[in-house]
Image (cartoon, rainbow, N blue to C red; front, side):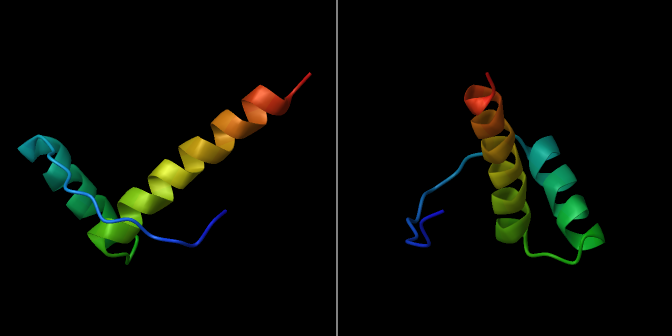
Length: 53
């Protein structure tokens, strides 16, 4: 995975933001790291699914 970073502005529903914040705290990650961790997991899963015969 490329380590170049891009900044974005992200609008989230308040309930989703609160949930992600709680998950980040429980996992001892920043909110940004939690979001990246979850998106990367989905990305990996999608990549594996498309590479399977």
